[in-house]
Length: 307
Ligand SMILES: [Zn+2]
Image (cartoon, rainbow, N blue to C red; front, top):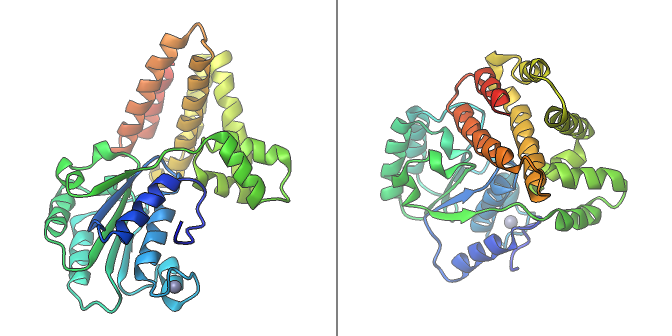
C-alpha cells in the first residue's frame, strides 16, 4: 500500500480508498459501516491525515499530529459521546465550513451517524447535497439501517468486516511479542474479529477480565441458568440507568458474546439450532431498540424471556 496506515486487516477497503485518491475519484462523502470497535473510526482519522498531510502522510509533521490529536483547524470531529447529534451541532458545523480554509481540505469526521436526529439529518443533508469546495465528509456507523436513506444515497459506502481469528492471532503476536499465549488466544476469541476491540483488550487487562466473566455467564445461561438468575444478571447489566452510555459497552459486549456463542452452537449442529437462530434475530432487534433509547432493562428482560 502507498500510505503507512498502521492498521490491522481491512486491506481491501484501504486499497479502495487509495485507488479513489490516486485516480482523482475521491468522493466528497464516505460512510464507513461495521460493528463497534472494528476500526472504522481509526481508518476515518487516518484518511483525514492522508488528505491533509502535505508530506505523504508522514505521521510526524504538525498537520499529522494535529489531525491525530483532533486539534487541526480544518478537520472537524463530532465524536461519539453517547448523546444524540442535534440540529445545533449540525448548524455549528455549517458555520465552521463557511470559514476560510487553510489546509488542503476541510474534513468533517462524524462518529456513529445513527445518533443524528431526523431534524439534524435533514439539515445535514443540505450540506451533503451542496458541499463547499474541497470538503470531505467521513462518517461512520455501526447500523446503516438507522440512517435516512437520502443520506445513504449521497455517500460512498465502505463496509468493514471482522478479520478472521487466525489472522488476528498472528497479528497480535507480531504487535505484542511479549504477551503470553493465553492472553492472545482469549483476546482473539473475545474481540470477534474486531481489531479495535482486540487492541483495547490487549492493553487493558481489566477489560479482558470483564470479557472472560461475561463469556462464562453467557455459557452458564445457555446451559442451565434459571429465569430468576437470568433476570438478576440483566439487573446487573442495566444497573445505573441514569448513565446509559457508560453501560452501553457492557451490554454491547454481552450481546456480541451471546451471538458468538449461539452462532458457534448453530455451526456445530446443536439440536436446538432453530431456536438459537430465532434468538439471534431477537438479539438484533433488541440492539436496535437500545439504540432508540428504550429502557435497557426492559429490552434485556424481554430478551431473557425469549432465550
Ligand atoms: Zn504529515
